[in-house]
Image (cartoon, rainbow, N blue to C red; front, side, top):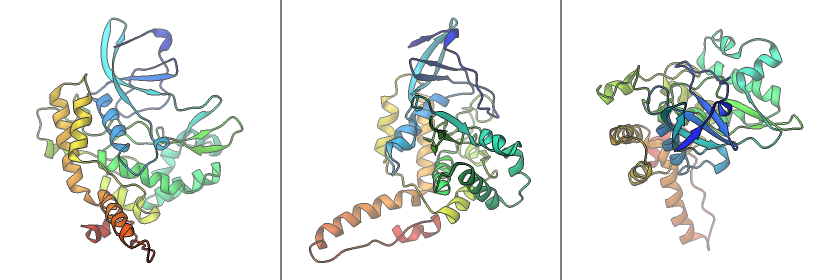
Length: 305
């Protein structure tokens, strides 16, 4: 348990549709208290599963669960190391766009009727303002993660870029995944409800309300940019290692992840091909070069099953 004080609390300038979590920072470590359910558990599980993906370690924030004591109350939540180097800033896309055009990116997006054009607009404008290349590939990673884990609270205030001391822009580690895996048990997804029915109710919000449409748009425009590599055993071990949250929450999270794994098998296909490819290459590398066929979209799932 960590005890935090009023001087540690931080004003939340990154809004959420479900209210504002209590947040603190002490000794370069950020803490977040659960607000609607088991958000801290989700942050922990998602980041640990991303360790078993094609992403590099610097591409996402790693979270740990924590019990927090603040003003005579105890909270469950999570903690993470501050990922900003000295002199760097996190600039949300909403802030970036407003600073350049003096208007809201969020409001601008919803004047664009075609959902695919909304993503193209986000990518084109971000690259234009920052000079960052391949922002579309970055967005494809985010939207794939959000789809798999059903993150309902991805918006222009928790997608951002980093600006260094020389005002040069960089890609930001992916953070803020706590609104996934039906973590809102206070309002939208009560524990006593049927989990399959609840999963049907989950809605995205970045481009539109349909998770499947979002990932299809991203992969059609910018290709599949992430593969997942975790097993059923990995999920069990990650949940078993966590020591604060009730077992019923862990069992629900496990069931949801297994359901999503069955639905999005194609996100694991690159892993299968990579293993098979290594075996083939080892056998023939003395004689020729082997190049495995490309795999860029969920529409090609049959190629690797």
